[in-house]
Image 1: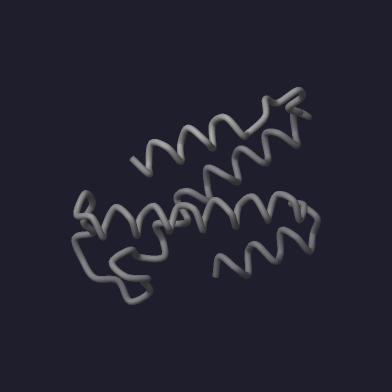
Image 2: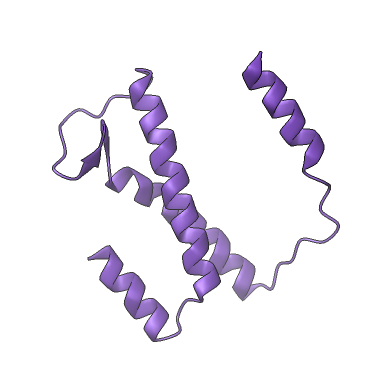
Length: 101
């Protein structure tokens, strides 16, 4: 049903393809985080789900997608733009060193 609603939003131009891409990326990122949390025992879903990947039900990604949808929509409505964003090299390097030990 969510896919049908998303298709309708795109068809009626209530949402742009850019917003749909952001929502999709948040959904994927959320699902990956849920998989990580459930695999390491820091999060447990109390009941089994018919639609799940590993121990993470698919609906868990929708919670993160809702946040992505909000961010994308607010940026469009209020014309928020990010300028002079700092280079990503130093944070990526620092994160890699933290994860790698």
